[in-house]
Structure formats: structure tokens, C-alpha cells
Image (cartoon, rainbow over all chains, first blue to last red; front, side):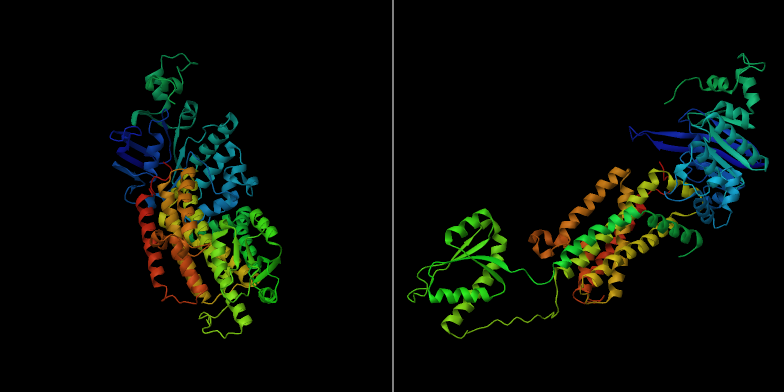
Length: 254
Length: 362
């Protein structure tokens, strides 16, 4: 069953140098995400991953195209959509001088619901940090806390924007376990990443974006078979990183 | 007005403010110190030091000196003319009277020389009429002529008003401006820069809920801060409040609303924390000088007065002063209230037009 469907999404920005020119940060993206899957959007920096996500989340206007989450039109009913989704943003800053416990209470209140902060913190393994301030947390703890914030409304869909960027391997593994466990409860998860291992390990399906367009979409194994089967790696050919380079074809982006 | 997410966010904003003890202390300390200095010095005027050299040393001159000395406006310092001249040059004295040797010569009026330090021109202009008046009454005492006219000063306001009573509404107006601008403009830019605003709008809260929460929270904060200042002036410094305190608070609330909308406008215009600081300075400092907070607007150059009168802070300071010092009611200051209303309209228009609520984090 489809829970997120988007057709031909376009987001246009003015060129920051020459304002008479404009470019499409997202250029005709169509998505069909199934209920209960972990769907990954892969791509180099500036490919349009975050913009696509924020259009689906109702944080950015959709210039052209349509998006539906659980059959609700995002453009027409952004507040209804926000009720049923959880969002973890790239930036994880919160009000100063507030404990994690208080922040979770605040976020629950913004949905006009009550949700036990301790239960939420237990889910992300931070129950002992309930009275700590957000800026006292380590990188991995901060990411886990931001997932706890995204869970306050028991969302149908959880959006994670580069959840493991900047984390050490242990913190990364612990976050993967968390995401897998949430997915096992039936939650649909959409994440962006440029970590190939993460895409391969977590995602049931992957879309690869470049220059605002989706240039490939399939299961990790199918993508490897199609685009990187000739690369010698272990017994099954190359890994997702090889797929990525084969498809986007260039090195550093910024 | 008080749906639950809004009320909760309001509570959180107040809570955040109350936990910032250092900010609370610093924002209170300056107004308290200024009022304290003025308030404690607001009793009797210090007598003015006047140098006096009696070159005549006659009965008449002695009588003159005795009458002058009995006037408690002046503190006479009797020295020789040379010493007084040196004191004037050194700046130890601002004014000196020299009684000529031929005083009392009825053929022509005695010229009493007034030695002054010209750099203190403002002071001398103020003191000269008082001095003239004193000389005249001394002359009448000595000559025994009854005065033909006498100026009887009747204070129509007939209450004691000191500089403190002038300053208090102005300081409160200035403080409410700073607190309101900091609470809207600075907060919005800071929350936007750190991505906090975006995080809030991930939830189904609407921009209007956020704005109302900030306005309500700031209202509580500013009223609390001003009440501390007001209470200090009222109870510790014996300030006189003639008008209705309820009216005063109504004007304060209206003014907080005005400066919050103007602060949101500054926050919408400025993209970075640095530029909001500069914008706020451009907004605040001219008003500090041009709004009659520390001295009356009438002392400004004529051509700038019409402009100064419509500044937001002028409207507020004058309205508050009219109530606190002159006992006027809300109807009497309707022009100020309309002016504040117009600024609220301008602030609301700019901030709603320019602030891109959807794309809060760029």
C-alpha cells in the first residue's frame, strides 16, 4: 500500500549570483513510498534531497506537482499532514536552558497531546539524560534525542534527514538499530543519506538523486546488479558506494 | 486566544526568560541606577557658589552683601578681585560679583561687575535673571522704595515635581522599547538562524500561534520588569504619580505591542544576528536622543521637533508622562494612542509581508 505519493515535484530558486536566472533545486521528482518500508534518498550534496523532503513535510512550498501523505494533499492541508508525520531535521538546536524532559513535553503540547517523555527517552536509550540540556549531549545522543522529538505524536511516517552524518561508527550502528526497531513496529521511514553502507544496510528501496532528478530507484541489490556488478568486491560484486560513483560519476561536490 | 499549544509555548517563553538570570539583572540594573542617582539627588537645590569682592567696604556694600548672603539660593565666597579672577580662570568658580568702590554714589547707578566663565553660557543665562531679581529686591530693601510690581508665581499644577518625576515615564518607555525589541526582533532572528523556528514548524503549530505566544510572553515579562522599576521609584524614591496607574499600564501594554511588531519587522528585514544588531541600533539610538526621554522635546532644534514628535518612543514617553505627571486620562491623549496604533499597523504590515514563515531556515 502506498503511503507517500508525489508526482512531478518542482522547486525553483533564483540563482544566488544572477537573480535574473533561476534553477530547479528539485526538478520533476515522482515518488511512490510503500507503507512500512524504509526508503532511502541518496545523492551528493546539493542534489535536492533535503528540499524534496521538506516539500513532502509541508515545510517548503511545492512550486509544481502534487504530494500526498496517507492520501492527504500536502499543499492543501499541511497541518493535517504534520499531525501524522515525525521529522528529524539536519540541524538539531533547541531552546537554551531547557531539559530534554521539558523539551519533549513542549513538543507534545505543540501537537496538543500528552506523551510520557520518559517512555520516549527510553525508546532512544536516553532515559538517564532526562534532566540534561540538549547542548550537553554528544553528537550521537543529540541525533537520538531528535528522533525522540520526532516520535512525540506517534507518527505514521518518520522523516530522517542525514541522521548519521558526523557520527562515529558506534553511534551510527546504534542509530541504525533504533531505526530498524521503529520500522519493525510498522512505521514507514524515509531517510536521506550519503552514507552508502547505511543505504545498503537499512533501506528496502533507494532512490538516487542528482541535479534535482531521481536518476535511479530500486532495491539496493538490484541497483548493484545493474550498475556495479562488474566491480570485484567480495563475492557479489561492488557495494553501494560503487553504484553511487557509477551513477553520479564525480568526486567531491563541496 | 488560549488554546493549549499556544498557552504552553507562552509558558515556555516566560520560563526561558526567567532562567536567564544574568539578562534579567543587567536589564534592570541601568534604569535602577539612573533613577537612584536622580531620585536621591532630587531634594533641595544646591546653593550656587558666587564669588564676591567688596571693593567699597562701605555700610551700603556691607548691607548689600548681608542681603545677598541671606538668600539661600546663593553661597557667597568672599575674596579679593584677583583671587576670584584666578578661580574663574581655573574653573573653580563660574560667576563672581565685583562691588565697585564708589557704590552708593547717587549720581549714577553703581555698576556691579559680573565676572563670568563664558564657556558656561547656559548656566549663566539661567542664573542671570535670578541674580537680577535678587539685586532688585536688595536695592528696594536698602532704598526703602516699595516695589511697583511684584510677580506672584502660582503653580497651576500645584504639586511638587522633580526631575525624577519627569525622568521616570521616559526611562520606563525606553526600557519597554529595549525589552520588546530584544524579545521579538532578536529572538526571531536567533531562532531562525539556529533552526529552532524550523523545528517548531515541523509540528502543526501555526505562525500566528508562535507570534501570539511571543507577544503574550513578552507582555508578561515587560510588565514584570517595569513593575519592579516602577515600584522602586514609587516606594524607595518617593516618585509622584498623579494620574491613573491603570491607564499607565494600558498605555504600556499598547506600547509593548507596538515595539514587538516593530521588532518583528526588524527581525524580518535582517537576515543575520549581526545585521539585526545594527538595525536595532539604528532604530534605538536616534530615539534615545530625539524622544524626550531624558530631556524635554522642546529643547531640540525647532526644525526637528515635528519629526521627533511622531517617533514611536516619543509617542509612548509623552503618553506615559501625560498620565503619570499631568494626570491626563486616555481621552486627552487620543492623538498619542492613534499614533501608537498607526505604528502597530506599520509594524504588522512589514513583518507579515516580509517574513517568510514557510521557509524559515533558508
